[in-house]
Every structure is written in structure tokens, then in C-alpha cells.
Amino acid sequence: MPLGKINYLFIGMGVAVIAFSYTAMYLENSADGYFSLYASPILLVAAYAWILFALLYRRKKGVRSK
Image (cartoon, rainbow, N blue to C red; front, side, top):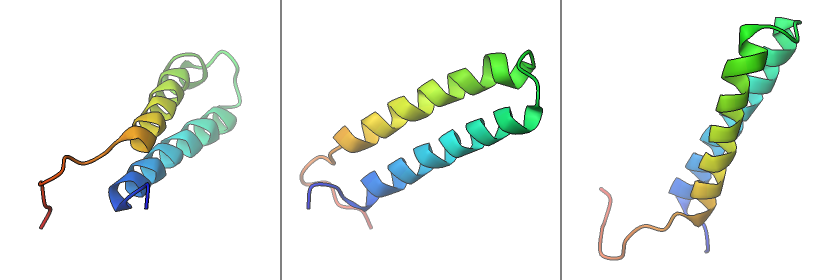
């Protein structure tokens, strides 16, 4: 299996942040608001980068989780 449980967890976290950012922009109802101009674009770029990281992440061999 190419992706493990941790990968899917990381992807889910990224998708949740993306959904939150778009929802917050929609609820703000202002194109000039703080969240629409500053917070949301940073969160979106970070979330997409996090999903890319999640797709490429591999655990080191020999390390076991309890």
C-alpha cells in the first residue's frame, strides 16, 4: 500500500484547513476583510503544501510506533 494511515491523517488535516479557510472567506462577506486578504491565503497555501508533504511522506524503516 503506497500510503499509510499517517498519510491519510495528514491529508485529512489539510483538507479540513482548506474547508475552514474557504468557509471563513465566504462567511466574512467582504472582499476587503482581514481574513479574506491576509489569513485565508496564507492558510490555503500552507494547507496545500501540507497535503503535498502528506503525499510524499514515508516513515523511516526500522522505526515502530506503539
